[in-house]
Amino acid sequence: MDLSKAKLPKIYKRNGRDCYLDPIRKRLIYITPEETVRQKVISYLLDVLEVPAGMVQVEEHLSHYGLKSRDRADIVVLGKNKDNDAFPLTVIECKAEKVPLDEKAMNQVLDYSDALGSIYTLLINGDREFCYKYDETKKQYVQIEELPKYADMLTGDCVPVEQEAVPERIPFDKLEEALRSAFAEDEDGYYTGISKYTPMELALPVFNLWEGLLDVRVKMPTGKYGMFELLEDYGVRMLTYGNAAGGQFYGPYRSFLVSIDDNTEIFSIGLTTYMKASWIDNNIPGKHPLTCICVAHDNEKTSHHALQMVVDEDAVAAGKTVKFYHNGRIAIGSIGSGKKSELREMVSRRYPKILTEDKYYLGSITADHLLRLDEPDVIDLVVNLISYSIVRDEFREIVKARK
Image (cartoon, rainbow, N blue to C red; front, side):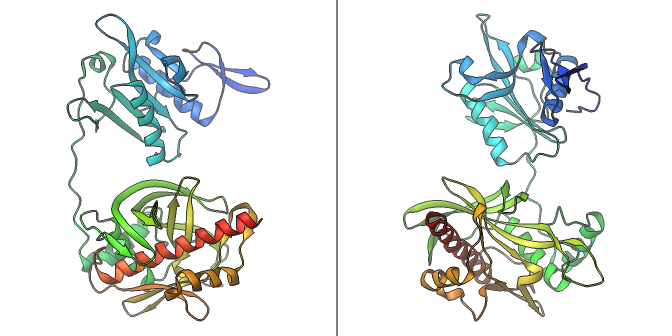
């Protein structure tokens, strides 16, 4: 859906702010990044997909469709059935440009589609889009190439996306070449999650590990692992998480459904870069991206990073073996930093196997081959990352309750 040529409504001033004169709602709407995307989509629907203006509803409360909900759908395209009654044909959720189209956003619009019984679903932010049609025979949503013209929507005509096979792993002897090529194209490490400032003796094994975590053909065996039981290797998901400092991290995570004392939780491991004042070299002033392994936790209250382990600071390379540590620092929301001594005391009771003299030892990998999620060293690292994150979040809850 090319919105670059979509016409925006005329702009007027209201209370000193710019407004669009919405062609559907027939009223002035304050301009925001999300509203600009919404107006471009409306224009595209009317001018390119030939949807009649009378069949477009904008910011409509779901309660108006007979649902007990306070939510509103960004855009609903109506159709007519054989009895000439209007029904929700397409549900569209618009996000501002650069806002990640992650699993949370996808679930939101699919929930709306489920509730309204629509046939087509579109999630778009102006840069990217995901479009689906509900297949009644398969009882599932099928991704399609694009939202078809209105006449084709009514007949159910569309072009399904051909599902690509999972790509083969990069050969072991080509990993460094691939990583250096990625650095040349993307110096901040956005796509790989690895900073070009991270020493190659650390960056290359971590890249190997990350490729192994992203390989969905290999599953971590289910079963009991010390503090938790792995119920299911949940595969790779596109997720967005925040941290205590207000940062946002978006990208692929390998997720695990675990049971902790009969409570089911989801922990996910991701790789990202984040900016930090340079400590690497006095000749490199300012802030630079560092490589960070993150463990995210989803429970009934929050979704957040339970652990951020900076590879540049907390990992030690010896040949092709890398040992991973953590310094014990812990942020507790708006409260600030927790006491490292108190966390250490709790770890000594709950998961003492990772204790060292002044840090926590989380495991090691020997990257002399393509690493896989089902091999002992990788499993041990994953188990320790999740277990340490479990204790950290338990500690956070204790401190919050105390405050």
